[in-house]
Amino acid sequence: MATKRLFTTALVAAIGLLGGCSIVDIQEERQQGRPSGDVVTSALKDVERFWAANFGSVAEGAEFVPVQGGKFPYTENDPPPPCGGQPSEYQPNAFYCPPDDFIAWDAQQLIPELQETYGELLVGFVMAHEYGHAIQARIGPGNQPTVVLEQQADCYAGAWLADVLAGKSSAFKEVTPAQLDDTVAGMLSLRDQPGTSALAEGAHGNAFDRIRALQDGVDESVTTCAGYRTNNLPVTEVPFTTREDAASGGNLSYDDAVSALADDAQKYWQKTYPRLTGQAWADLAIQPFRAGEPPDCAQPDASAEGAAFYCPDGDFVAFDSTRLGPALHQRIGDFAIGMLLGDLFARAAQTRRSQPTRTEQGQLTVDCLAGSWTNDLLLRDPKSGLTLSPGDLDEAVQALLAFGRSTEGSGPTAFERIGAYREGTLEGLSACTD
Ligand SMILES: [Zn+2]
Image (cartoon, rainbow, N blue to C red; front, side, top):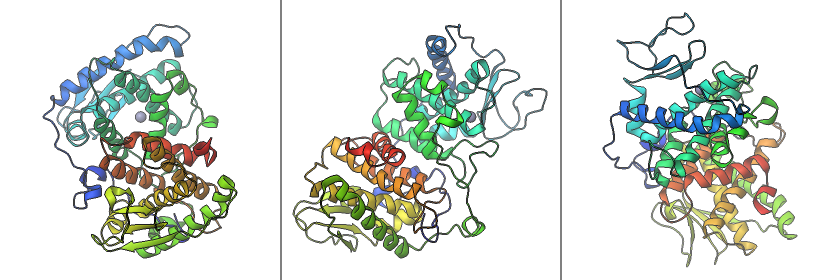
C-alpha cells in the first residue's frame, strides 16, 4: 500500500521462522509426530470418508467414486507417473492428474517439511485440496479460471476441516486452536507470489483469498463451494499495476509507513466515527515509545502482548516503535504496521463509544473495524492517496497470526480473528456494527 505504493518482498512462510521479537516469536515445540507417509495415507482415507458422505449433495445424489488412477508418493529418484501421456518431472509439489485420475505428492521434501514446520493437519489440508480437484474432474465446473478452481479446492478442503473440527475424522483427533492457526500459517507458505495476476496460469490466489475460501468451507458446506464461479467470488489478488511498483517493490521506510498510515487512519475515523455515533472524531494522539519504556497508563487496553495499547484514561494510543514496529515492518511488511494501527484506532473508537474491546466478541469487533479501514483502502480511487499493493492483505493476515497466536488461551484464535478482519475488509463497516 501507500502513496509510494508500499510493498515488501514476500516473506514466504515466515511466521514460524520469525524468531527474535517476542510478538512474532511463536515457534513452538512440536510433538514427535507420525511418519509423514502415514499422515498422508490416513488423511486421504479420511477425505474419501468425507466425500462418500457428502458427494451426493453436490452431484444430484450420485454415488462417490474414489480416485481410480492411484495415489503416488514420489521422490527425485522415483518420479511421479506420466500424466495424460506427458512425462512428469520431480517438483516439490502435490498434484492431481485429471486425465489419469491420480494424486501424487513429493514425499521427499515438501510433505515432510510442511509437517515438520506446520504440523500434520496442514498435510491433511493439502491432500483434501488435491482431492478437491478430483471432485472437480467429476462434477465440474469447466471453463473457470484457475484461481476459481483453486479457491474451490480450498473451500472443499475447508468443508472437510469442519468435519475434522466436529470430531468426525478418523485421521485427526482433538484439533487444538494452535494447530488450526499453524495450518493457516502454513497456507501462507503455499500462496502465490505477490503480484501474480489472478488470471495467470497456475494462480492459486493470495493467502487472504485462500484463507477466505477455506473459512467459507468451514462455515458453510460443500454446496457453497460447488457454487464458486468467477462472478460470485471476491478475488482481491491484484497484479502490480505499474512497472515502478513491481520493480521497486515500493517499500516505504518504516518512518514513512508509520506516518502515512497513522494519517490515513485518522482521516478514516474522522469520516467514519460520525456515521457510528453522530459525533465528531477527536484526533487520536499517538505516542511511539522506546522498547520497555511505555508511557504511564493505569489500565492499558493491550494489543501485541502489551507492546502496543490504547490508554482509556489518557485517550491515546502507544506502541513500541524501536522493537515491535521495526520488527513487524521488516519481517512481515509495511501493512503489518497498518494492521497494528488499525487495531489501536479501532480500540479507541470502541472505547470512546462505550463498547467493549477486552471480551472475545469485543476483540473480534476490533478486528472487523480494522478490516473496515482496509475495505476503504481497497475500494478507493487508486489516484487518491494511500492504496493497497499486492501482498498487503497477506501481510495483514500474517500480522494477525502473530498477534492472535500470542494471546492463545485467553481470547479468540487467530483463525477467528482473521475471519472477523476478512468480513470487515470485504463488506466494510456495516459488517462490524449490525
Ligand atoms: Zn490446487
